[in-house]
Image (tube, rainbow over all chains, first blue to last red; front, side, top):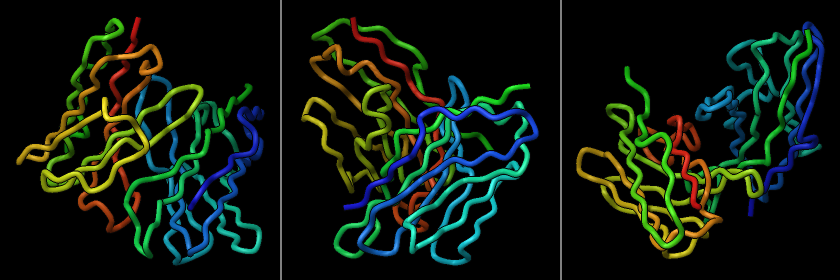
Length: 117
Length: 115
């Protein structure tokens, strides 16, 4: 079975500083991995996805993530934080059974990002 | 292009009642899935529908049910509400259920409070 662990339920950075949100996954087969962002009182928006092509994935709003199989990690980074990046971020893996993707996602518990002026 | 629309956005019910939530997917999307979001359990998959058929189901009791109509709109129902059912219920749509996997477009959710 697949699972996702996000280290740190809260992360606080200063505006202009590097953003690093950690995600480790567990999967016995090559995973499909995703990062979603949720702003207050809104649904989730896809930031980026890894589907076994390039290991460095670029997403929207300047975010990127690197798939590292040896570390079973898919950490999200952004070189310079903006106030508008304050939100909750979720790492997710596509559930796979019987060798095929089931289509539904297994989410981590989320990391709330605060950006200080 | 209009996004995923969920109604109602907020509702309050009492224990023992039932509730029906509605979801209209993005035009052309045929797959609809539902997730429950709570502070304690996070985001959990409820079920997925494609072509009016339930394709996949999460680990929830039978009180939680859903359906999909021929126009791809979906409803979910929770009967005999319990306090623990208080949550944000998110609907997501995609073109197809598994290709590409996980590329879901979420609505803003229906926030249910059970008193």
